[in-house]
Image 1: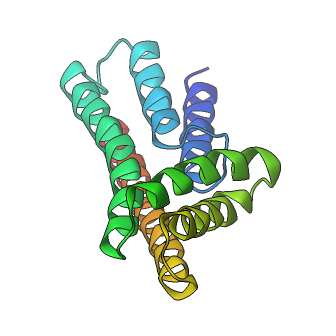
Image 2 (image 1 turned 180 degrees about the vertical axis):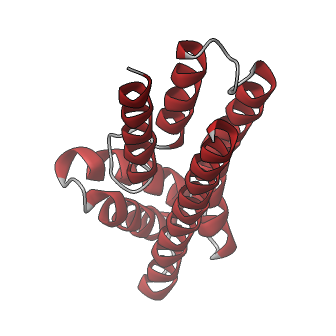
Length: 159
């Protein structure tokens, strides 16, 4: 039974890491749920409360960095408020209308259209759309690395 639970936990954690790039999977929060679930199963002997709190804090950090990276990417490349709102709206519409490619196409198009609405020229709008995508990739890279670190820390704790 112990081996089965460990395998299930590792599958959940790996799905969480995959969820950092696959839309509709919760990503790092799923990694956390796998770790916390295993801790609960084994009575918090190896995966103790202090470790769970640290993993929970890292999970919150990942959510914060995800939104911040997209915002900063757009802002760094000169986005206006309309461009940022366009990117956010484009992200949601893109995910629902064109999954999984909408994750990248939607924010770019949204930022581009928002900047045109702001009155910027096409080159500036392209630059802002590109900055938004760079921010998204930056956040995604951070979440992947964080998920992998959480996986390895979990393996070290239980073995």
